[in-house]
Length: 381
Image 1: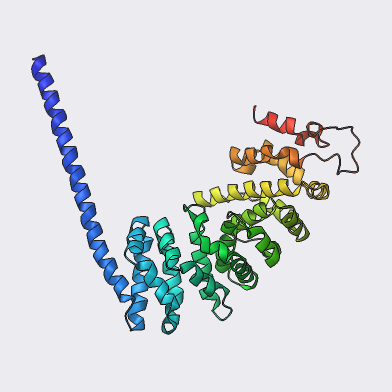
Image 2 (image 1 turned 90 degrees about the vertical axis):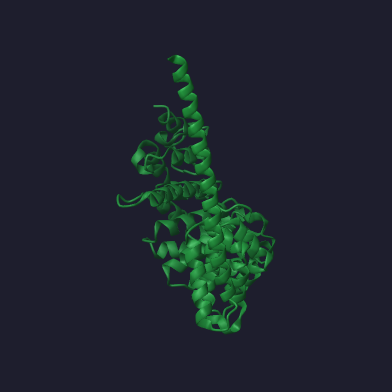
């Protein structure tokens, strides 16, 4: 009886293994079939980009955008089958200037994957996008879509963006054009696109800080933040990113401070998610707190700035963030960002003229509840 049971178990395992193999093979075959069908459709759509009739070209561009929205796999197929080159051709064709906005939007959609970005650079697409962005005769809508392409191909979530050699070549005029776009637009969406592209550029090595100082980028972004306190949480994230990365340079940090950066950053530090916010917005609010904390700590290398932060309530805000978890949305990541830089921020005896104690180290801060020893003790409770 036991032998029979063992034989049955072996038979069941063999049968299960065979079924799994068949189903796996069927899945692979089905995937190949779908890819084949999609490839045929994409080839036909790409071919239509070369049609003489403008309405057919516009329809083809819209079709590619709709396909690209479905996911990265289809974007890879579009890039591999000539879609990126075809869309760039539309952007360059004078008779198709009415379709240029849609073509740039399609490029931003397709270039969400490395394959699309590689094809864009191979075809000279970075230069094309930069030319549109820097051309004062192009409409604001065209320049904003060009900014959208740049924001996409420089996204920190996409690999290999640092290898875009053409981007470094045109970095100075690109930064200047993005700054001008952000300065003069009255559209919150366009400002967000320009700010996102600028924020992404700050992660690239070489020349970005100098280009932003020359363009006055910090003052433009800060002025918008000052004039529009109700800007979206996503826009705040981009502004905080630029300020945090600029604050790493002493020269750029001076511009940030002179343009009112301390008050803006303290305001960003007060960012908290609303009860109606979804998960992406909650995560963004946490990033805004973290980045504004980083920016403030870097600015506080200068005694005068540290005094300014203290006088405007920065130390008290730090205490609230550390003591009250709800102030940081129960995120220990925000707390760690603060504590990692707390020694830079809280050494106030040399900047507070009313000090009466004999503090001799950051561990003996003039604000007892804001001393590094006290704050770090909160995390062990």
